[in-house]
Image 1 (tube, rainbow, N blue to C red):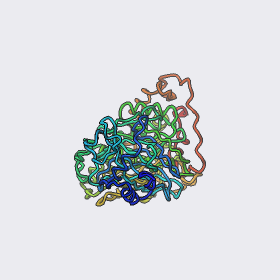
Image 2 (image 1 turned 90 degrees about the horizontal axis):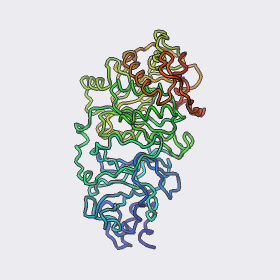
Image 3 (image 1 turned 120 degrees about the vertical axis):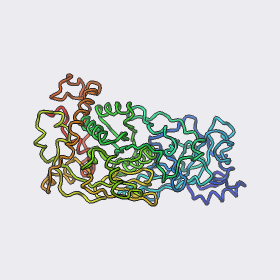
Image 4 (image 1 turned 180 degrees about the vertical axis):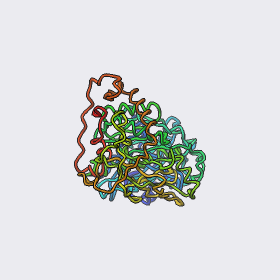
Length: 533
């Protein structure tokens, strides 16, 4: 048996040391022995490095996919890969770290000799991977996961990485490694054609990443003082264009600069609207075609992979990131914007160790009557859910139950849906008091039926602070996009004839998804603009 086959292909790192002795090769720092590395298959020339698209890990017993890779230098220098695989007993895999240039370049000297001889070809270093399953998996067969590739002290940050289960097989995936703490140019990396593969991305310059010149995690002076929003995968052919405009424009008023969304299935009108925001650099929309059955094999389209991808994608690019759904808005009670709220809290309490700000959930049930004061004079305003629905449940949910949060990404290790699962040591959650801000959540009764509207309630018109600005911004954007996106005319704003082609029909939501697919419920219940008469 040759040296490559002598390594159990998905075996423990200790097995590699035994193979090293058999091969007569000394173990190189950080990777498998150089004699074995030299015999591994090189990259297929037709396999481009990609970022933000699901790729398969071949040769595994169970489904195993990888989506994106990030250089994480905070506690232990690591390449952190967003993945989805078996919840219990996942396949054991290897990381093949790829470097540009020759063996004398910025990477380690123990490079793959078959490729290091040419400066035009990448060379590799292979390390054993650790698969860390993300906590929120609901005990389903598959889960979002991190694949961790330890760099140690001697390996530079690579340009790209492949995850393999069998060392003797050519890699079936190649991920660009995003150096999010140093590469600000990667900030607005977006997908290509809507819902399709993003264009191949050039690998980052390893000379820049090898320097590891970014400031320590405790120093965030280099991070722009901005806010980003992450939204879980959009599905069920989501096609509420007016609702999408309301979400984007109200959050912009609240101080958000960028939105990252994931496209499982979108309708034609919302796709067109998002294309416009992408062209203006406001939205990043990534394809989300994960070959796992939602709610049967994996939780809700693998949403926790999306949330953590977005967390690391925004790290060092934005000072704060909010992880919310399309029917949720973090609304300050006494401040106009989220940055003003955060600044105010910093003057009232010690927020030096704050990694996330948690906001209690308030349901504004859609079954409650519309606000009587809105009237019928402005059909656009009556179509905006944050203005139309002003009655909310009196009792707020406690923190960690339905709550959402605004976080400082560089202090977060693992993001959850309603709270942060793991912080960088020394950081934690600040529970924002409800008299400072709450989460406005507009949806149907969470357990089906209409009994929820019998609960004690109160009229809350805090969102009316933004009424004029919101209506003005949405109206302007609606007019600009109406012809191009074939949006139905607003009844009081007949600028154009109705579109000649009907929007694609929506796929009905599965019955067992109704209790947790919030934006699917909103998609079903909110009035389209054409029905506002």
